[in-house]
Image (cartoon, rainbow, N blue to C red; front, side, top):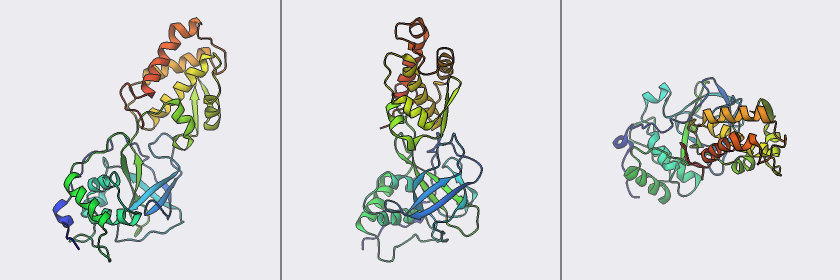
Length: 301
């Protein structure tokens, strides 16, 4: 088999790649099950609202060959980003920058990807060699990372990682994949309920459940501009919540005040009204530009 460089030649070189990731500082619950597209599926539970991660299932990968992991069992974990690494990472040879590069340049099967990850993550000197040797796909990912991965920083839409550190001793450390934020339009948010970071949202002083808000977003406007403002305002608030630049905050506050004055949604504000033409339309246009990635944050793919 073709030899590849050992991990000792590419030791730690962390680069900040997660400035927009916000994570709870208190423990959350993780449940690990066998994966198909990843080494395991990781379900997060009891995650407070308003953070980059939410209560859903993520693609998970092993970064710890020293310990085992209980499957199908609730496990309390602390979450860390590349900007805030846990102390345990200081004691071993890690290169999560290379791992992040691999997750953005996958080849082959789940096993191929995991072997390539383990090449850059080891608790013993001398690197890792799979029992049957590296596959062609694993070698391709490893050599690609060695050539191009040093200093890699995920951009908009790229895969980033969150590190899970169990509170219980002798449990395996792992990572999950998340996608870097980008702004979504009202159409994106009403068609992707799983991406909402919250289960309810307040617009113009009125709180709606996620289901209620989506139903309203799917309602035909019929000349009522409160629907137009509602849709744009929901999308803008969600875009900020998932970690996009919040340069639109003052406009969101003004649009919220507009909805409180002329709403709630369904109040029948026509396009030719003074309420819309004097203030509403200008606020909507700024929200629309933000949601479409034309201001301070890029759009989602």
